[in-house]
Amino acid sequence: MEPILELESARLVMRQWQDEDLPAFAAMCADPQVMRYFPAPLSRLESAALIGRVRGHFAEHGYGLWALERKDSGQFIGFTGLGVVGFDAPFTPAVEIGWRLAREHWGLGYASEAAWTALRAGFDRIKLDEVVSFTSETNLPSQKVMQAIGMHHASEDDFDHPRVAEGHPLHRHVLYRITREQWLETLHG
Image (cartoon, rainbow, N blue to C red):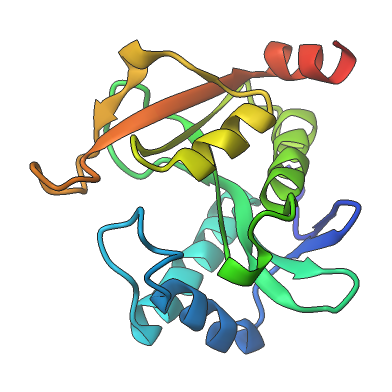
């Protein structure tokens, strides 16, 4: 498969990471509001390491978490993309879709727009059979994005995240799924 280095939606460019993205990315990942559904905000060093892992995923798989840039301003606003799930769970092996946007870009439909574009690449170009997404039970904003892009939740798939400590309020996660057939129905339905 040819690597997918850039995608476009109506208002966004989904592109490879640039070194200049680090300050805005680190600020976003240090924001307690952005990171409220994660165990802790990230330091600048942890954010830089995450960019390194994302670049490694692209090198290995040909896709990953694309940096999001607004077409109208060229501003970096976060990421959206596809990644191989890196832990063992009842639903793995699997490819997940995820997103994280800077707070000032919330509520404008960017997460759904970029996620829809990533799903299209996953099914059309990567030829995935299914994509999953998961988040803590309390993360209703991300669950709304999952629903907006046609994903389906079945409570029997919910799980305890192996990388979140037992007893932590974010330990329990919900799992959403969408198959290629469901996605095609959403397109033509």
